[in-house]
Image (cartoon, rainbow, N blue to C red; front, side, top):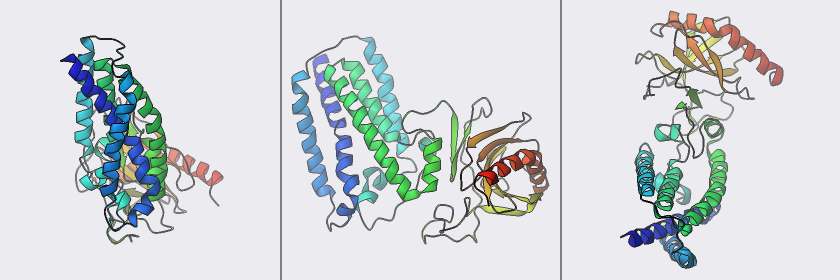
Length: 351
């Protein structure tokens, strides 16, 4: 029985090891594939299956080299198998089958180009690749085969290259939204933080501050905001020259000393004790805030000051966000520190 499991593990790792090569066949040549009238997968899938055979034949001489054999290894592997399956299941949520299959990359007529940052992707940018790694590590630990460990190490190297190139590609496609996402959410290994990703920046709260798991919250869209795309909302398809947080609702009647409050989380549609918002300075420059109603006062950096905005800050509000007068008073409570950040931004980038 153990011998057959070793064979299955070796073949599984051989298949997994070809995934970066399959990616390299598609992405660097995406424009060429899009020009084809027929689906490129008619050619790509058979070539990928041929890679499985090549990988198996190339590693067959080392298939029987056993580094160790231990019953406890299967218990450890079972946890990794379960983690991998969980990641696969979560990766499919809020992510279409076409996106998982890479169809938007190679089909010129496919307009499904949206950046998904919620769910499991609020904790790790590439959960599918993490799932692949979990499965390969599970087989390596369980079987103790040198060939499985070798193939896993090979994938770590080639997969790192693949992820770096994919990040460059996604940044070109989604621009600043992806840069903010990439800077806030790790690629493969999740941080030990509770992370929620808002449309324009990941928001991070240590579990000591927010001990409740994040849940979906309604967002406050500005119906009058213009979008650069006929099929996407304004906040995901900002027109050229539009400021950050374009597409979200600005509360013109909630201001203090010339600073105006804008809401991302729609706390007026649904009661909330934490959420995302932004502040507009008198010169129309903007900063993001991650707010929480809390007796514990804090003001910490989430995203640094950059040319397009004067940072994103995690702040505590003393009053419940249940009426606009409270919102104004909450804004006033953090405004002295916000002004300091705005002045710092003006010294660096302002006119």
